[in-house]
Image (cartoon, rainbow, N blue to C red; front, side):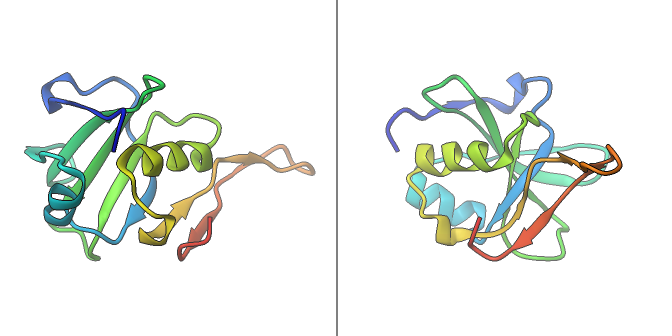
Length: 128
């Protein structure tokens, strides 16, 4: 977990609002294993427990567990860069987590070659 810096939720950076993955672990386990402190907060959708981290690169990420989420796990949010896959790798490396804890991942939006439409791909399972 070297290179991790935790940031208070009050300093939530603009743009860190795009869910990129879901890890199977709840905040309590992330507290124990990674040493993260989750804070209670809310937005327009629901109350949640959240933690903000900054990787060695300076990229900031959020870990969010909505109180009324229908499935277990904690979401990882980024600032919507072009590569959700590389953002996810950076978060997992920063936290020292194995990719096997990932249960869901959204790949970056891609341009359809034939239509030019933006598409979002979703993958379930640990392989990303």
